[in-house]
Length: 169
Image (tube, rainbow, N blue to C red; front, side, top):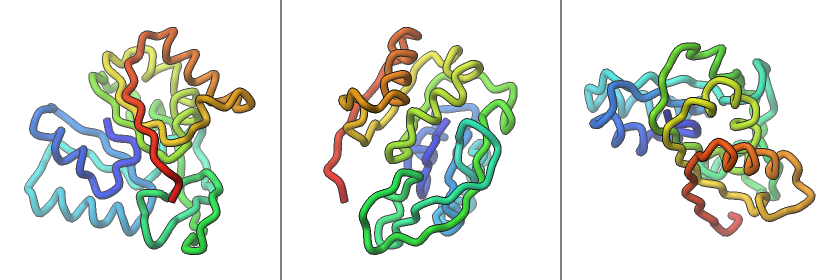
C-alpha cells in the first residue's frame, strides 16, 4: 500500500514484487501523471485512488504547493506558491474493506498520525511491516497529542518505522 503516492515511484517499483499495490494520491494533476505512468508501463496490479486516506469520509481543504507537489499537505505551511484545493478523504475500511497488508508506505507530509489513528482498528492491527516517512518533527513535540498517540499505538503494535527527517521547504 502506498499512501501519498505522488507520481507513483514507490508503487511502480513495488508492483514488480507484489500481487497488488493500492495507491492513494489526492492531487488531481499529480494523480493524472501517476495514472499515465501505470498505462505506459502496462502495469495491471496497481489500483490507484484519487483521494486521501483520512479518519472519515469528507471533502477537505488541501494546501497544494504548485512548485513542488510533494510538499503539499493538509498541514498549513508558509509557502507563497500554495493554492488551496478541495480533496476527498475516506478511511481504508470504506475504500478497500478486505485487503491483507504486508507493507505500507506513508508519506503524507505531517498527516501521518491522522492516517494511522483513523485506520488503526482494521489496517494497522494486521500490517506485518510498516514503512513511513515521518516528515514533521511532531513526534518530538510534547504538545502534539495526535503524533504522540500515533507513536504509542505503533510501538505497542510492534510496527516498524523508517524515519526520515527533512528541512522545511
